[in-house]
Length: 320
Image (cartoon, rainbow, N blue to C red; front, side, top):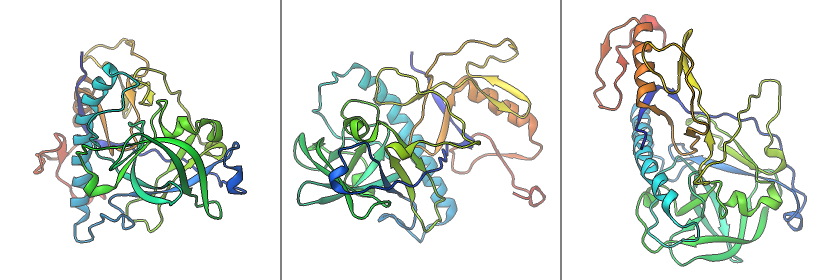
């Protein structure tokens, strides 16, 4: 049975990870246990080639929310298709389902540069034209003098390309958990690890994604949660136990007026690099919605954009 989700307007999924410095010695040592740090370019940031300085902050936020809703709808469909598709099949229509961050990848001995959508919900790295191939990938690391080269990386080239390539980039950088993803193919070099640190949209500096030994995040304020292994292995599954609103805790499988702690399935959500909003199961969302409504004193209004159900008139004394 499919679980249907609704956007939670007051909770945004922003995972901030502190990055350590990564020092690479030379290109010849890229085959050893080393690391690389790349720039992550948000599509709405001034550093993006698709940045439109004429739109307002409100319009930019609205675009973010709409893309999140559209991507969620596509992911819900794609997850079930992936579960039934043969893992050895690479043929089909290339349909990117949006994404918020771009990375630069140089492919081949001639170093053809593409600006790819960084996607944790895709395995195979794709470009526009050609076929399945094996090539040398080079990444311009911000923590080394020059590029870091990785030979014999499998990637695909789409013939039937739909989606958002014209708007955002010339391919997909597959960061999923499957066998052909960049993370898995370079596992002997980077240890299958990556972390990222996100800046604000109006920042003049780019976000960063770090691969390898220095992707480990440590410190007294760092919290961790296990990634659950499930099928399809493309996605990174986490276990959501519930949501707290003030002092009231709502279990994942929230049932109104039912106080006992109910069980929940491990790996019941995925963490998605390309989605701004958090999506919850309908039953839990409704519980959060009603609990928030009881906690907020204000004039409830309808969203003129038709995106969200829980909106309030902004009063100056609220100081927001």
